[in-house]
Length: 144
Image 1: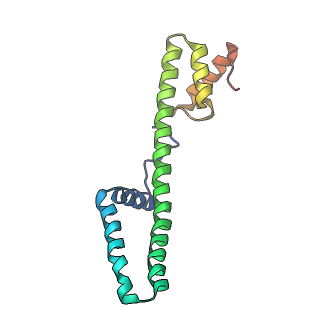
Image 2: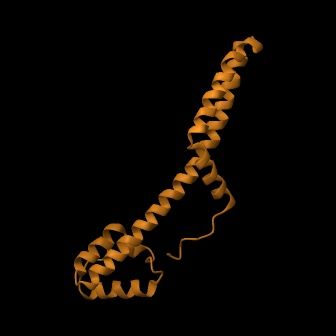
Image 3: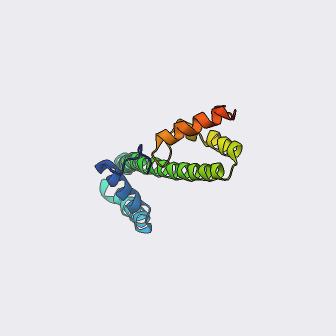
């Protein structure tokens, strides 16, 4: 695991993940439909159409606002996790290419995904610096 990735998950991230799990279920959608079905006949009790519309508009706006913030948090964390996995795969593939003597291809892969700008998935920055120097000595492009 790269050292810039923390295994610690904060309370807000755990809360956002749980909300994301709950809101992605069919029963949550059914609950939303039920809420509208219960709200619709409430016009009989409220008698004022402005108040009746204000209630549903306010409820949906608040729920939407909060869910967007929580779901965006979950989506961002999922995107970052996927990116870290792809970086680890690219780094490993580049190391394999180096061992097979495909130095130019390995350098192109590292440049394409920007691995030289970050720490390797092995967490060993000394090896990264050594590889950079070896590539410079072989006149392979490191930065585009």
